[in-house]
Amino acid sequence: MRHRDCEIRITCDGEALDEHNVQLVDNTVECYVASEAGKIFEIICSNHSSSRTSSHAMVDGREFPRRWTLAPQSKDVTFLCEDGIDGFKPLMFSMISVTDDESAARELPWANDLGLVQIKVVRAEVVGAVPWSPPSIAQAQNFGHIHETVKKGGLHCVSFGPKTLMPDAKKQLTRINCIDDWSTPYVTFKFRYRPLDILQAQGIVEPPQPVLNDEPGNPSASRDTSPVTRTRRREDEPAQPGSVRPQKRQRQADGSSSVLADSLADELEDERSSMVKDEDDESADDLDTLEAQMQAIRRRIDSARTKKIRGSGQRRIVKREPSPIQVGGFNGGVIDLTDD
Image (cartoon, rainbow, N blue to C red; front, side):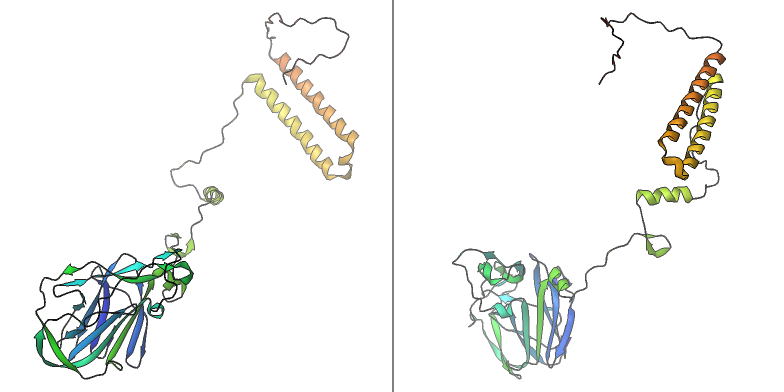
């Protein structure tokens, strides 16, 4: 974000985070950024004015121990959290640690500032240089476990990493006089960070739109790949030049068997047509009529079978093996030899 002659952005992996819902009220500019747990980030500052500036940073309500001064026209300076004369602590987005331990904190003095990176900027004049000395503000510490009743689970906080050595250790500090008061700074930047899914749920970030598998040349039509649709399309599609549509397999028959089958099929078809017509009539429900129709079909089948035997010219001889079943006395009843 940029306001007046000051510009500040938050970067991860060398890329500036997207700023959403940017708002400007008086000299305060604020926005939302998406945070990702485990990602190290940096605060990058630029002073486009002709005056020197001094900046004071806070993360989740915790102050950096040292303010930073930027010379006029300074570009892309990293705002570090100083840790001694020769080091700094890197910043990282982290998950808030929630526990059911009764000794964990239940009241959070920093709860209102959770998820906020704030930088105040004032204009300043250089007075001189002094030797380095430890800062008067205590080193910021990481949050401990909080009790699950606090209902902050799922949110992120800023964690301070282990001390990292700076290649160029400071040996002196710049003494300044502030032109603006810190209670009414020249510019105030507020970055409200949240997990991406929370920003989407709150309507701050638009969720990704589903990708439709559209037909080529017709972006508004989605593909229907159901088996029924695929079958219907194959039936409706015209045959391509040089292609042959598979045909149903023809029934194979020989000689008298073919004649008999055709004759029987014709007779059954005629009888079936007669039965359909009868079913359309009110008398189709008459049991006697249905039985008479079945007897007529049986007579036609017997007649067709007789024609087949006569037309074959010879009878097949079937060799019968002696039956291993010995039947005793027979009293004229029916013996069922079928398998269950």
